Length: 451
Image 1 (cartoon, rainbow, N blue to C red):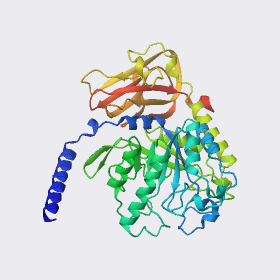
Image 2: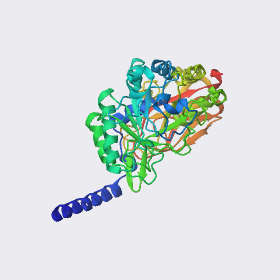
Image 3: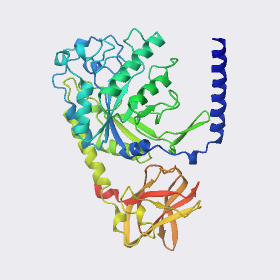
């Protein structure tokens, strides 16, 4: 036993020194995303669905004491949820399979606190099954949220016993519901609690090697995705995909979660006034997806089990508004691409790369006649990392180039909005790049046409 402890201690010291050395040698511009992260970032919009005993108690936070008999939706309809999500532009859906109250939406073998003991479908129902099937039938990827904090289960104070219970639930979700695009780890209520994250991720990876793990940077250092830091759906900083956690650098793109109803993740009666307007949702899109982040909209089915009619209609209106706003790319009318046609073709599978060895480059669009626009949409090709450190959008006016927008990070997608300008020559000026940058798309739009 003494030798085993010595060996273990030596291995830990070696691992710490290796991590320290690799962390010191890391350069953010050299980190690259995995193929799964590239595909995930291209989805751009998803939904996070909250439905459980809280729905029947007019509350946001359950304490784990709610009677399972309360869960009795008369018309639970995941197909309707997913149809509404798709109409809103979502490409993936995450179901809260277990919230902090511990109630499980699938017939988990590890607890009696689940749908199997509810009146819904006489205990024979499985909402995770119905939701995962409905998502795929609507062309959406599917993921799950499994709360580490559990306010019901009596094993929670016993760290080892609860970890084993949690791993059992994770294995059920990872083996019975097809491919999972994302596994959502919520840190709420977990202050001071240490979970066995290595075993959690090992269990997940055994059955779901391509699933991306979401977690707050403060909760878990080695997740694949990170929280934006608020629930308003806004990115308030220059958005770099590489995050530094105590000297350890990791490609970890941002997901910005915000509910469709102001400050409400679960459904509440007589709550119509909280539904966000189309204008608010479009603004949120521009400040999340338009800043290189993922937008995750919270949906809340009501106590019948259906998404309220107003919510479904609002999602459809939002999806239509975004489509209309970004349907007419003026650059497709160009007469000359200046040799950068692959960044001007609205084809996400092509990209233009700056000259080899360059740290500065320009991409110009020339029109036969002046065009009026009030926003530019730029996308970096990120497979080899994020290279742009400073850029500007400029128009040629009265014999000189005039700057109409500027920034640092571009990343997956950057939407710059500014007072309308009219010009015939427009350029994307890559003022500083770590190496030759690659641009997937440079597009121009006139937002006034969508009103």
